[in-house]
Structure formats: C-alpha cells, structure tokens
Length: 271
Image 1 (cartoon, rainbow, N blue to C red):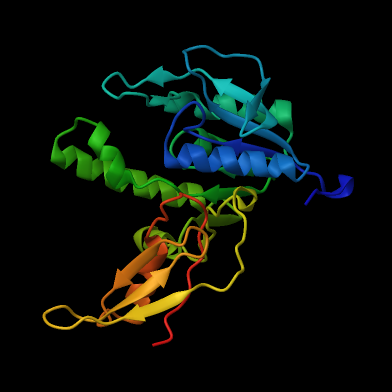
Image 2 (cartoon, rainbow, N blue to C red):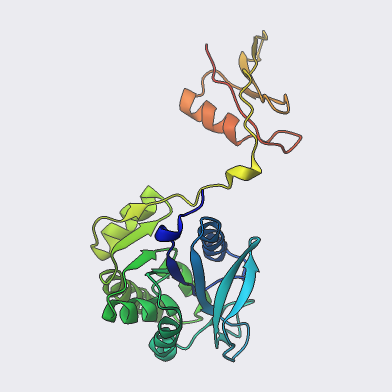
C-alpha cells in the first residue's frame, strides 16, 4: 500500500541503536523505517555514528529501502563488544540540529535513553508530536555497567524515573506486546500504553490453504495412544500425547519445524 502525496509525512526516527548493530531494537527500527519508506513517507533516522565524528546526512539503503541517516558522534563502551552511545549532555544539542534540518511532521523515538530523550524534549518545545516505542528494560542495562549492586539499583530507579518524564512528553507510547505494556504501566505509573506487534513480513510467506491431514494411531502395552499432526506444506508429522491440553498441543505443534524449513500450516485435532 502506497500513501497518497497529500498524506505523505516526513518522519524522524530517534534510535540509540541501529544498523550496523545487530539486536532486537535495532532490527525493529530498521524494518519500521523501511516499511514507512515503502508506504511513500520521507523517512529520516537519527542514530549513533560508528565513530566519534559528525557526518553529513546521507542516504543509506536499509532493508532494501533508501532513507536519510543523521549519524551522530558516538563513543564505544570499551568493555562491550559493539555498544556505542552519544554523550547524554549533547543529546539535546544534536536534537536541535537534526530537527532544524529535517522539520519532521512527527518524531518516533525508540528509547528514552539518550537520542530519544533529547528529541522528545526538543520536539515538544516545537509542537511536533512525539511517539515513543519502549524496547528498553533498565534492569537489562545493568549487565553492562560494571557497577556494584547498590549503584545498579540506584541506576535502575533513576532510569525508570527519567523514562516516566520522557514518556509524559509524548502523544502515545507503544510496546511490542500486551505483557510489556502492562509491565510498563505498572512500573512507571503511565496509562494507555498501546501494544503493537513487531509483526512479520508477509511477502516472505506463501499461504497454503489446502486441508491439513490428520491421522490417529493407537498402540498397546506400555505405550500410550498419540495423536499425529501433519504439516501441510512439508508433510512432516508431530506426535502429541492425548493427555496434553488442546491449547498446549496447538502451541507445541505450531512451534515444531518442518524438515523443509518452508512456511507451514497445521490442522486442528478433531478428537
């Protein structure tokens, strides 16, 4: 689906981690940015550079889609394999520069840590709506701090307090799952967090709507009867004890991999 010219937006994503980083938050942001380009929007991304230097905005191809990257000077966390970060006291300065250059219709931050924190505050001053997606759990960050436990606990508290202040500046806050939304609402006393799945790229899959086969076999003696599920694309079979609940059986069967590695569809037990 392509956006009409009248609905085309200039969108600025603020990301503390982005390509070439390999992690869940970076991949989410990359795919989101590429999807927005595919829909016809003008997408800009503010993200750490791979060196301590400022580079001019440039077009980079991410997930096969061209977008404008604004790479900010960043420092390598020396005890971490890949993590780089922008000095926090420079985040609002860089945010003002990027906002001046892009003049976005909307800002979408991917964390409240550094780049997103600065963008949220400066965009709010200019009346630019801000959307936030939370990928960050401060409790997970402490694994990389090398601080004693008492200071880590203080760091987590300060991080969540700052997350609350940042998210209060936004028009909407999202998380990838309902459970994550519930946790965020309970942790920082925020309401209305919207769960939006990371989703899948449907173009990578081909639907197989043919009826799934199901056979049942019973064995005697010490063995127990088992239901056999058949994968309709690769015709692989998974056996599940009948005592397993239907919901567990469905989850187990769905998670099983076909030997061909191709997309699968599963039938449901009738007995």
